[in-house]
Length: 239
Ligand SMILES: NC(=O)c1ccc[n+]([C@@H]2O[C@H](COP(=O)([O-])OP(=O)(O)OC[C@H]3O[C@@H](n4cnc5c(N)ncnc54)[C@H](OP(=O)(O)O)[C@@H]3O)[C@@H](O)[C@H]2O)c1
Image (tube, rainbow, N blue to C red):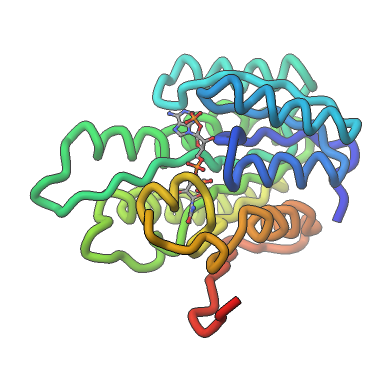
């Protein structure tokens, strides 16, 4: 599964699933643009990517700001001449009972989890078409397949990104752009630990599990439609 000569742009690449995807893609031969807000984490991942011999541009970005999202896309194009694989991975998961959901939490969640992927896709779509095609991976969640009582905001955002991805997949078929919603179950990351502080992180999926899935999806040939990739934790597994 190789991405030699290709350019990947990964949001939320400073840690967790995004970092694992950025490193997996670099190890598969891609040059990588990494984005998030925390510059120290971005510099760290940039160092690891360059250590495997690939080029990396680290672009500090707050994805809630449209101007910064557009600048990220433009800097990726300027640095490497195009983007072949866009990974909309950055996300937030802030849970409240429905009557207590603050409006700003709803808006933030939609801005990071749904609006930013839309903005980046819109900015890069025509460039991908001119390049002959590309691949868009939107990191959704199993929470976009089934909602629980306590995660209405997060689930709504993930259902939305899965719907957006299905539309992209259909729109992309004529122009050789493949789009896939990657839907992980529980993964041992800062986000997961923040919402599940008593959970044993060694008993759930790893960021590398998801990165391997993302690399598999990104390296499928153009004839393959793979619109959704769900990776669950086996509830019977006990280490
Ligand atoms: N962990 C799980 O169990 C799980 C399961 C299913 C799906 N997912 C999805 O997987 C994706 C990655 O999650 P994770 O668990 O790896 O989370 P994480 O460890 O918290 O990492 C999230 C990344 O997103 C970035 N980010 C958040 N807000 C941002 C903003 N406003 N602008 C730019 N970057 C921002 C963070 O960087 P900064 O804070 O530095 O900006 C960080 O790099 C998310 O879409 C999440 O919903 C996770």
